[in-house]
Length: 266
Image (cartoon, rainbow, N blue to C red):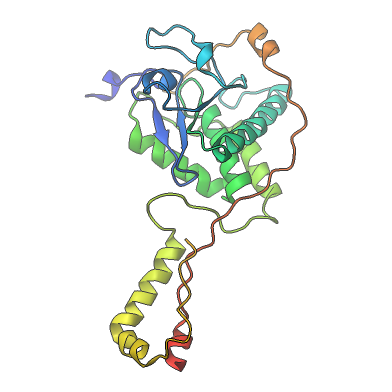
């Protein structure tokens, strides 16, 4: 299929990408992704535009959290940028609450590449300790790995970048090693594990045999798309954003290998 034969970003199927490294139950998609999924697959749907059913009619009943705001591709006014920040923060909080309840969660916008991605990245920054740069890179990778559509440009709104970079900077002092829920270990974990296995292959086994079994070794702790047209009435009817409560960061302990010094001393 040639590039120009690809569907638009609001019409590709399944229209969403999993973000398992942020959380195993988190997905980011377009306006038809909720209706293309099996009934009940998503327990929570955070909508930044009205979701559509399979007949491309508006299906507001699919939404569990409504946060409509505009994607003006970097041309946002000061007021609209401020409102977008409020919605992104409220969306991150809604995602955190839904995932904490064990609900598979879809965050969607029109194309599934700017508004929805920004909410998912904000969730990763606030709740999982990711930096703006690494979270954005991961979302772009997942978008391109699981979807294919014309003019594919995930995370391309510079205004949203500025909001997320500010958010990342604000959380830098309290940042902890981020959780990575994905099937593959983090680079740091992989390096530690490789070093441990290398030590074992070079004589660690004989050292272990000489050890007294007094205590077990430490175990592992773990052309650009147009903006969606939203009427002023819809924006006005979007629920007011109350002051956001403080959001605690979640983290998984990184993989800990037994130090080589302990093996040698044994």
